[in-house]
Length: 596
Image (cartoon, helix red, strand yellow):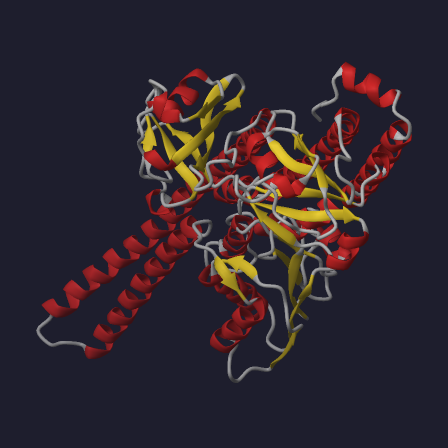
C-alpha cells in the first residue's frame, strides 16, 4: 500500500481536533464505502460546511461519479450524479483535470462553477491522488456562506483527502489480491497450458482492467516468442506471430528478462510497432514483464492502454500495475513448469506403453500374417486343381476374412490408444452423451437389465464429446462381456464430497460424477490398479487396451477414474469430470470488494 501522508501532513493532523480520532476510525473500518462516507461527514463537520461529497473517477468512462455525500441538499437529491471530466464540467471536474486545490469565496463570480445546489455560495475542492500521483477522486465541500473557506480549511480537506487515498489504495489492493488468488487457483486446477493461459488472460484483462493483454512464450522450433493467448484483434493469429529476441519492445523484454513500462512508447528507439492489439498511433501506454523460470526468460506478458478521447484522463501504468503483473507472470512461470513436468512424465509413460504396444501388436499381427500366408497357399492349391472344390474354397475365404478382420481390430486398438489423449473440448451435457451412448451400444435384446439413473440438470462439462462417448461405451461393453445376465446401472450426479475423496480428486473445484456398475464377478483387490494399465486383461479377445484407453481419455480431461466395487459383487467404475465453470474473479466480486 502506498503511503501518501508527508511528515508535515501527519504533524498537522495530530494537532487538528478531530482528525486523530477520524484516522483511527477509518483505519479500522473494513468497508471502503462506509469509511469514505465517514470521511465525507467529517469534512462537513471540520470545515463547517452545508454539503460535502467525494466524487470518484471512473477511468473507463472518463466521468466523475458522486457516490459519497452528506448534507441537507445531498440527502434530498441523492447520489448517482455524474460529472464529465473536462475543464467545463464545474469545479470538481476542473480539480480532477488539473490536480489543483480550489477554494472560491463567491461561486457566482467564478465562471468555472456549475450549479448543483441552490444554497451554495462558496466551495472548496481538493484532489485525491494515488501513490503514483494520479487523480483518483475529488473531495468537495460547499457552504451557504460567502468566503467560508481559507488555508485552514484547505489543510483539513487535504488531510482527509490523504486518508481517502489510502482507503482507495486499500480497496485496489484487495481487488489485486483476489486477482492473484484467482490466478493461483486456476494454476492449481489447470490441466493444460491453454487452460492456464486462458485464466491468466481473463484475470489480467477483466479484473485488472487492462485494455489489451497478450502472452508470448518461447517456441524452440522457430526460436521466437510466439503469441499464445490474447485479448484483442490478434485472436486469429495465435501460434502464428511472434518476436525474435531483442525485436521491438516485447522482444527486448524477452531477451533481457527485465520489465518495460513506457508512456508514448512510439518515442522509444526500441519500438517497432509490430503485432499490436491496436494501431500504433492509438497506443498511449505500454507495459511488459518477463516470465522467468529458473533465471531464464521463457516469455512475456504485455498489456497496453489506448489513447483516451479525454485529454485529462491519465492512462499511465503505475508501479502497482507493474508489480501485480510481474506477480502474475511469476505465478504463470511456476504453473507452466508444473504442467510441462506432468506432460513430460505422461509422455514418458505413454512412450513406454507405446513400446510394449508395438512389440505385442507386432507379434499378434505377425501371427495373423503367418495364418494369412497359409490361407494364400491353400487358395493357390485349390485353384490349381482340375475341379474346383467350393466347400474348401468357402472355408479358405472365411479364414482369410477372419484373419484380415482381426488385423483390422489390432490396428484400430493401436490407433485408439494413440489418439485417446488428443482431445478437442467444447461445453457439453454429460446426460445427453450418456443417453446417446446407451442408445448406440446397449443391445436391444439382452438378458441384462439396464437402469439409467441420470440426475437432471447437471452442470455443463467442457469435454471432447466423441472421446467421452468412447469411454462410456468401453465401460458398458466391458461390463457386458462379463455378464450373460444380471443388471447394469449407469448413474450421473453432481459429485459429492465422498466421491471426490474416493477418486482422490482436487477439492478445489466442482465435478460431475458418472458411475457404471454391474453384477458381474467384480475386480479382485490386487487388480484394481493394474486394470487400467495396457495389456492387463482377463479376456481372451483383444489386446487389453480398453480400460487403458478409457483412463487416457479421462486423464486428458483432467478427470479421475477408479474402480470401487466389492470383489464377487460386481464392478463399479466411478468417473469424475470437472465442470465447465472455472475458478475466476468477476465483476460481482469486484463490487463486493469495494463495498467491503
